[in-house]
Amino acid sequence: MNQPHRVLPLALGLLLVAGLAGSLLQPYEVYLISLWAVYTISALGLNLTLGFAGQISLAQASFVGFGAYATALLLPHGVPFGVTLVIGAAISFILGILLGFPALRVQGHYLAFVTLALATIAFLVFRNESWLTHGTSGIDKIARPFPFTSGVAYMWLCLGSLALVTLGVWWLLRSPWGRAFLALRENPVRAASLGIDVRTYTLLAFAIGAALGGVSGALFAPLGQYIEPSEFALPLSFSLLLMVVVGGSGTFMGPFLGAIVSVALPEVLRSLQDYYLLIYGIIVILLLVFSPDGVVGIIARAVARLRPAAAPVEPTP
Amino acid sequence: MATDPNAPVLVMEGVVGGYGRMTILNGLSFSVARATITTIIGPNGAGKSTAFKAIFGLLNLSAGRIILEGKDVRGFSPAALIGEGVCYVPQGRNIFPELSVQDNLELGGVALGTTKAMRPRVEEALDRFPILRQKARAQASTLSGGQQKLLEIARGLIAHPKLMLIDEPSIGLSPLMVKDVFATLQKLRDQGVSILMVEQNARSALEISDNGIVLETGRTRLVGTAQSILNDPRIAKLFLGAEVDLETPASP
Image 1 (cartoon, helix red, strand yellow):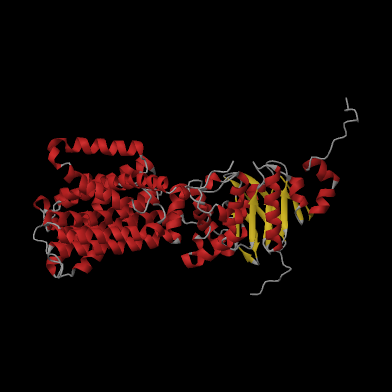
Image 2 (cartoon, each protein chain N blue to C red):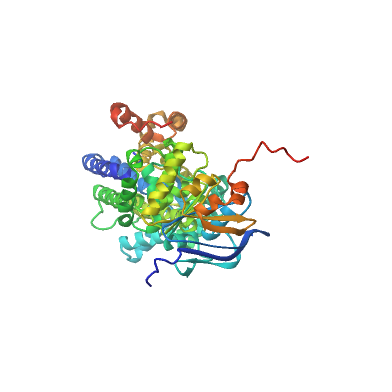
């Protein structure tokens, strides 16, 4: 599950199955599949920053917000959707670089607090700068780009975008950049001794992760056709963090599976009403206690048990 | 510019530097001949490992020149030095234990910039070290100490270095593994890699070396062929653990 080249067909197959299933389902399920694709794009970005490069960020929701607001504000001015998506990603990329600078000086909990500060500032801007963002009343009637106006067509747009992002992340992880991110996570000093520019790669880890947040936001705005500031506040950042960790941080498939859990579990537990969050919390705690490497870890162990020959090489004395 | 095959690959000229206000290297000068193993020996604190840090751009130098293949590389960053053909295998364990053997090797090729450039080099390293190919998918921490050192050497070779700096490769290894690592270094020398080694295990190291350098208080005390240093009775007594005559009574 850690080897991107082995699981790429699995990821793309999952998208195809989701799309085909969605084409036969009711509008609400189609919406959920689209939402899953959108969240997965954002979680793939956070997984690059956190899972592969080892830099914690609680600001991913803000980048989703920048992407969403860029699209919602520019579309009515006749800017094509493709362009608003690129602008949203670019804004997030640049702000991601800025967020990366503190990571050159602080790590761990301290870095989490710095990113928390950015998330708070971004939320205040979305909420208070109503001349630009329309404040708490939000922006409605966000048009879907032609010809993806129907629910099913827009779902295919979300899944297609996710497929492109998946291919991009797959390429990145196989490239020397992906190796450099791993080295950064494991031991920055050793990484530097191999000639890896720790500064550049730390900033890129944030910037690329943030840009994917922006892409996800650009797709999010026309999905519900309405956005308002609280959608991009801390709960979404925590939710994206949970998707990465529950799925399996630092694994290629983790964000796909984590996002399924995050989108599907609330629906499954909906009948429990007020107890839903309690049960959800317990499930997550149990998962992390018994499988710290997330859902991917559970599946990898099950596969290894079914195929003993594929077990890892025994340690040498 | 065609390089003179007889010219030394590295020349240190009057290098002065240290940590903060403490000067460790006091005008260090020596050279490393092409496709040879040169071993630096000396007592603790002589500046052996510091000399490596100076060459690899990890130390602030206040004077001197470091000439690599005719080019002054003093002040170059480690990344730039890798580009110039220097690789550094530091003392102790420097693998990424949680990553696979293959991942560790690929990390040696990050500076090459593209997957296309990196992949054949990794294959080449796996061909050169069959034990690493056998364990390519295993977590690097599951390798034995000697295998981990070979992995570090293999990783250094990915960049096709002209000069390999290797600091205390025998530390923590069993005598058999030390032999293995030294044999690997000899093979690399025969293939044209120039090797500069620091080693506490001075006698064994000099036995496989072409040249030797004796450092003392950050200065070069003696340079010569490894054989001449091994045969020098003063050096033997000071650094190579020559036998002390126990029959002679100690002076009162």
